[in-house]
Image (cartoon, rainbow, N blue to C red):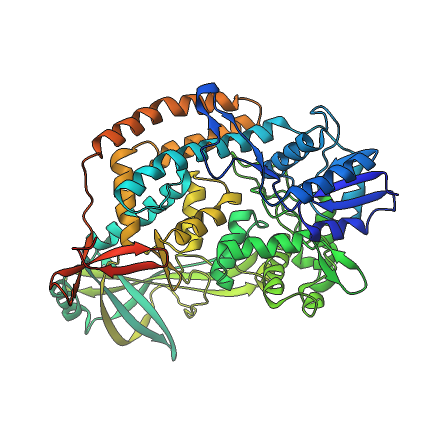
Length: 606
């Protein structure tokens, strides 16, 4: 009989760990959280210093009894839930239910599920980190207070069943604000003048820069016509040539948010889908000849740090595949404020290339694994090198000189770009090859064609899942581990719709957003939300007491709540009127929201 028990969250993770350990160990899964706040009520005792009222999750009674029996039979219990705040909290609740003393050395974590890491971690257990647990507890309690106390106002004023989330509501506000920017946007006209030039039959393009060395922006067709008349018959003389070299360095290994963004851009994956696939790759995949294998390091991280062992493996792989001139030992600086407990996301076994695993993985697993693998290997490769050339070309007419500029670049050494190039939301062609011949100062180039082009400024683009994640991270709203939940929640609540890849607010989202902004200024505030996030970090670091954070939050929140209840008592929100007439009464139907989305209803019945 096994005398040591290891409890993890999922059966997949349990299967992977089992094969690394002997018969002394039994590995079982808790299937995620086993205790939580009740769904039927607030579950936070505000009168007694915000004490949470946890209960065992419904439907888990037999699992809990099984865990208790296993723990009773074991001489030692290890709580090996995920290595983050959520995992720490699950371990804390497991310890409570199983009667494990709080100061027991029972907690183990795996940044990667490999034989070496699992065996090493089991030998180095620690106490449950109450700072991490309290940080998760603070988030859970604060979110519960906001959600359960604001939501009834939405039920009364908008529609029963609606809910408001602390961070989700800020995400909705960002999307609604962007939509308003787009609606209010007034396009402005601007012009470019392109000239097709040639030297000895080699064509290239120059763009109008200005006059007499001063940059000019063109906004009217008449301005363009006046310039065209003057340059039509002029000579195009090269007045300056600069040649150089440009290096492009690789991006660092993935963090959670950069992985989410790239999988969205490159693979078209929703954020939630990316995280589900990554979880599976981390916990273990059945590889022929190896059994269940954890293929990537822990996927919830905002660090780009990489272990020396992984560096050595990357060096070996790169030099063997591409040659030593493609390898460069690179260190990446993790941004300030990032949690640096884990490495960046990387493959655990460098020798298991994507192509070797292609027939083992599902198509989606293969795509994400290849993305993670190539990004990591590329991060340890040399820069790509471009030869660059830029030239000033002038046209003289009487006492005026019209300035044009041409620039080009040619890839000289691919470096990391052999393997991987990051996509961008604001795509530009800065790394595309553009040809400019070998020009010399003083020579005349032949004008082939003048092409004026009218354009109009464009509104800011709607958010995609990738660009929203990037904005949330930049503004410090939520944390990478919460982005998938934030986005899926606001879509599930029908506050936001996805049109192709774009996130568009629904009328319901706009109505709820307006009501919250007008009555809960702090809650629906980007800076305030980011500041709360920083306070959670301080709790995790042991520099702040979690209940003090809740106390400071609740006093002004309670005032806003009481004021909103009073002011909205007699307010009736108007339904959105459609352009469809009611067949029975002739009045215009109004838009309502039900369980399955929008529907039209007669205003007499609403």
